[in-house]
Image (cartoon, rainbow, N blue to C red):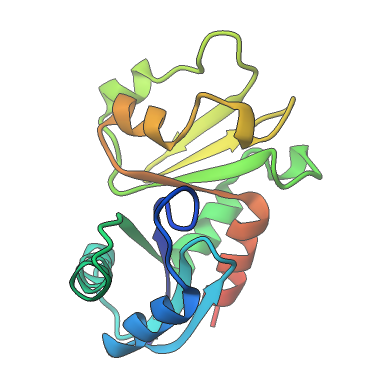
Length: 179
């Protein structure tokens, strides 16, 4: 069995509401084991036989749509992938405030041309590093709540689905998925 984390985009922020008990039940109903949620923002960790991330994500997204009528993007990373994301962070040691260091998880690696054209919005002080299917973010002057460098911005510029987690959540998900 492999440990995985599924990250749902846009859950319990705005109008898309999902009880974590429902999320745990749906993931369990798919045959996954040791299902745990983290916070109320669409993070679920589970064990499953080794499977491609996109197949797991599609199964969860389809179950959410079929049973609850929720159409939300789902991204999946294995415990090993989350450990690699944490190890690769160029900003983790720069900040004590976990709201200023984040990771944007992408559904697929963007093209090199789109990465080359990605820039911080005018007047914003932020650093970012694209690493495959993740973007490491650092907001030295404030948190993610005031930036225009959001999921919507990243999706528009890169042409891929994105969902962002702060550093505290990334570490917690890594630990839960370590098995």
